[in-house]
Image (cartoon, rainbow, N blue to C red; front, side):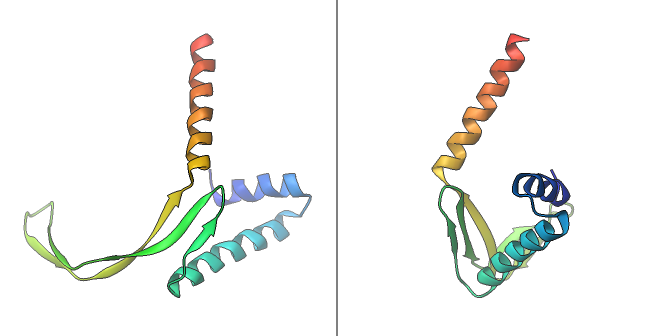
Length: 103
């Protein structure tokens, strides 16, 4: 699924135009990025939590050459799904599996 697909689904479900929906979705993405850039986490109940994790400096290995490479300290965005989200996906996948098995 692409961002355009999400825009189509949300527009159909809300009655907003695709242009308005795209602006809302872009605004959401930008606000998430900006909050994380400022070191703030975001919690969306029933969906999940965005936050930034610090990765310590370390030595890694280049898989092509086997050469040891220094990786400096850096920060990465992470997303943790809520329990409700995970269980909903699990149930949906099990239902699909059951439907395919009965065909």
